[in-house]
Length: 414
Ligand SMILES: [Zn+2]
Image (cartoon, rainbow, N blue to C red):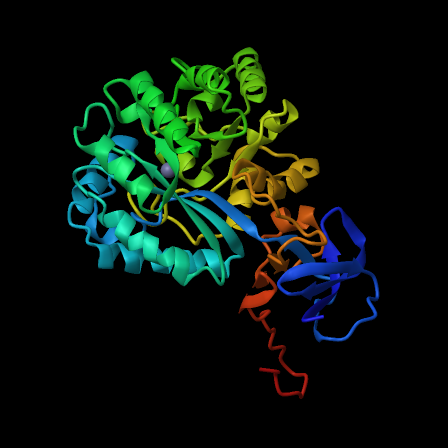
């Protein structure tokens, strides 16, 4: 074996630690007390998980708080401020900020990423130029796909359509949308489906980003998904409107999404930050209960979205923290913590249609080690991600903290 991870606790089979043998970048064998030679790492019974997956993160506009105002904290201000700031983006600047955010993601165990990337006449293709370089440069640690979308509208913003098509010919492999900034939301959705079909690519839209469960575009998206037989290839992000829906409407939407094959990505940090700014007491949370949608057969994921910008002035790029934040905000029960971990691992893999994901023989050895002993505790305890492997190669390691006790007469270990 090239590498053997010994005493690993697997999610769902935590009682009995096992060994994972890796050869040629893939998982060759999973067996207790594996009799084989090779470089060995004893994990001491710690939890292993498949690499974490970020399905919705904006690398291009991350880390710009120093050049934006974020006083009101609402969506309108965020769009305006970022639109102004991004006119000054140049590829080198985008590259440097995106790289910083990407490295934080890698160091928190993310091994797959779909990054949302905006094009319009204000930014042109400069954002794409900055981010595209990172795809090859960091292939040793993470697989990145780029989703091209029009943040500032499509039908109302001449020149954007041509730029989207050009971006999809030059590095983009998924098409996105933000119909709520368009003069014709359904017109934008129609055009996005047409582009997706023309390129034969998946769709990942920002959708239904608002406080009230009225005029849900998700029903129209479900209709179009069925019309074009696009089930399993469409994801919608935010859908905060659904967080305010009474149970009957919530269940009806869930059934429609499950039947059409439309997946949902919840973005807890952004949704908590931007929603409810119009309220002065009993402020809404705006986080749609994706763990409840799972019961209806809707696929879902949780993701970071924005990092250190007016949409979200937070961000350590930790998906374990995001899942913990979600569990808090969405009232997930202890018995649902395992599902919260699934929302940043198995389920986003399905959303992105990844073919060979997961800790199973034959799959690429994309593995992270968490400083805990069960999937439930990975959500409850917010453990450190101690190390990560991409295609069997260790990509990072984090030391466990050391306590320096007084009066032992011993020198503290380093
Ligand atoms: Zn987004």
